[in-house]
Amino acid sequence: MIIFVVIVVIALLLAGGGLAFQRSRSRGLPRSPSQPPLSSKPSASPTEPSRAEQSPAARPTAATPTAEASTTEALPTEPSTVDTALEPDATEVPEPAAGRLTRLRARLARSENALGKGLLALLSKDKLDDDTWQDVEDLLLTADVGVAPAAELVERLKTRAMVEGTRTLDDARRLLREGLLELVDPGLDRALMTSRVGGPAVILVVGVNGTGKTTTCGKIARLLVADGKSVVLGAADTFRAAAADQLETWGSRVGAQTVRGPEEGDPASVAFDAVKKGIELGVDTVLIDTAGRLHTKSGLMDELGKVKRVVEKHGPVDEVLLVLDATTGQNGLIQARVFAEVVAITGVVLTKLDGTAKGGIVVAVQRELGVPVKLIGLGEGPDDLAPFEADAFVDALLG
Ligand code: GDP
Image: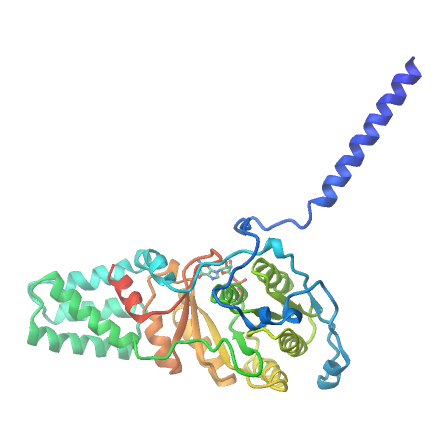
């Protein structure tokens, strides 16, 4: 009897252990705590069919290694890129691009209230004397508008206030709105080149590590997918260990393949392979995340220059987006200057505008580089990146 009971207990223990093992195997990869939950929606549903959808061969397939002979011939070092598999039922439907800035406006207004409210309070004073104008200029400088643009705006406001008067808060708001809008320059072309006849449009994303570069690549991929575009991501930041994993996670959530290489491998090889994969799949856009080590200018120049040159073996690079952290103020402008000397920047992405009262950097960086701010980051959520719209931005500034 005792032997029988012992056998039954052992059998139960074995069965329990087996189940626990099964469960731990089926749990899969852990998700980062900061990652929002995956949507239960079955697949992304773009509004219009993308090139990748038109061709069955272009659809994402299971993982296959892509180091190929042609790639090694074209490059100085041998890459060993890996495509990530996509699970169609794990993809999300990102929010459409239209109206994002309006949705996120409160975040900007929250951080910018100091500027908008402060300026309005000063301008609607009964008497606009020299001290008040000095206070207006100081407020603009605190918000990182830049010395020359701040002085220009004050001069313009002074003249108009004298001619038209600012008796009410509405008068002050109207003058200020027009003045700020002129500084932000609504006439700039902020469209992103996201597709091209005869091959994918290629977007290089550059910037110093920590500015939000990889996150921004992921968010741009979501914007493009929301717009009905198909995307391949290139994880060419091979120097930061987690960057490729991070990018891959972003991509897989919206059904975009990520091409990556070995850690500390040649970034140019990964970039080359990513564009090659994009051509093979017939996607609309290839987005390449690059390494942002500002160790020395010549190092950066060599690295980015090589990535660009190697990618151009396939065709031209359509956009070079510089990611800047808005909270870094003058430091961000110094970074902008260095990068602009190394590559021809076509647009700026200002991140972390949700956590700063330094929104004036939009004006300063456009002046500095002579290129428009095209996108702004307003939070850590997956869809907290908005196409920049001058009107909505200024309205948000004024609260
Ligand atoms: P990278 O080193 O430049 O690639 O930077 P990451 O993409 O890893 O981002 C660095 C940190 O900035 C992460 O914690 C991001 O969530 C955060 N981040 C990126 N964009 C924004 C933004 O627009 N707002 C806020 N609040 N955080 C952001």
